[in-house]
Length: 184
Image 1 (spheres, rainbow, N blue to C red):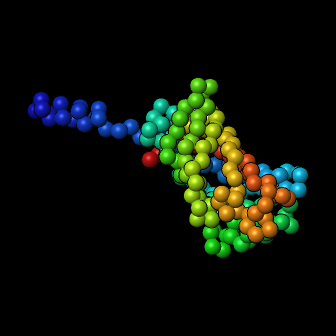
Image 2: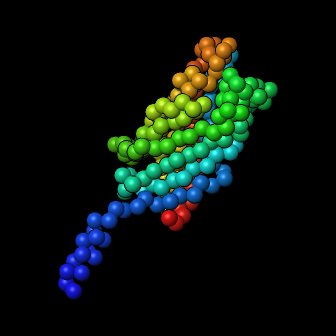
């Protein structure tokens, strides 16, 4: 009987911890900004979802996978949205989604975090780092993150749009996410 009790305690102590599951609230935003013709062009993806398991005390078991509907992109220049969605841009007919998946997280000395991830756009996968600030209050979390990618690394902007003018190659991707703690 004593061996059975020791076995139960041993298994319980060696079992991995699991990060909390978080449900993204609809008010969350995933957007970008790029300089076009010397002026900022801002865009937002209206449809995306994320599977989030995250615990600041258990980064080793934390993981995020986000799927972005590239056809849901809208910009502050609606006349150009069809071009961004077209064959020279996101090519939504062939690549209807983009994907962001974390490989790990690092806590920074200032209390912020960095998500090490891979980003796939137009079937091209590249490593990215997403620095972010996290605030957790009870069962609500708020994340603000920003990173820069090179659009042409992912094949976005082909043909006449491959040059750095009128559209710069550097694109700032921004995330303003609110989530509530769920159950696993």
